[in-house]
Image 1 (cartoon, rainbow, N blue to C red):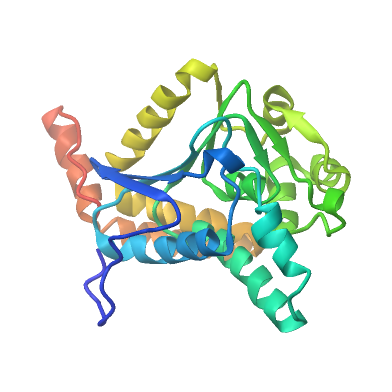
Image 2 (image 1 turned 180 degrees about the horizontal axis):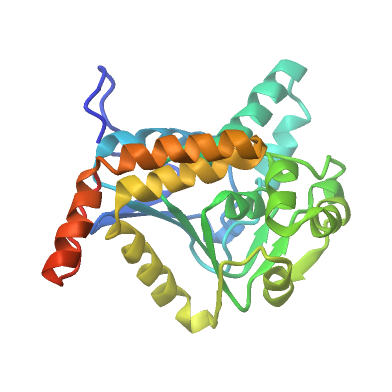
Length: 275
């Protein structure tokens, strides 16, 4: 937890998704199953604010993002968002599109590892939320659809044209973003979009196991690894090598590095402190 706190209190009542915490794992459940967990203006804002707040709380070492009911997330709500945007001024539209991108940027910059649990459909903005997570545990019934061109918008939205080619390659990203076709879990796995493909009935167990492994791991080292993965996407090799050298020198003074040596010497498992 950051020792530097201002006057703003932590948020305890998140109104636009369900949040639970247990054993260092926070779980965000998109909870509009009747709309396939379609996103609203308010749920985007709550996700942005939660991701900004999490690193300061000190009680979360892994975050799970999942959907209630038959699917993960069908994207922006057609009535509450798409209909409303037709009446907005250009400056209001820019505020909105910037906010959706801020959610993805916050996911990548949040030091807490994020696991997306994907079942059913992950479409539009839902597919980008999955893309922005660190891990995607995917049920065999899942489907992905970056369908922005299908509604007359650019296929590049919320940072998808930045992240997707780096994950699956330019060729696959071009197909997914330009055509907007729905692809099944096996195809997404073949493209490289899937971290772990599991049977539907195994999804919850696989997500729980991964989240607990991350929560019980060396949090400081994991946070720095995530930061380097994101920052080095646009860096030269020389800059990357130097940044990694500086980071490793810093971590060599960490309590967890010393704990590894003590545990190795004593022939026991390390007791990670996250510092």
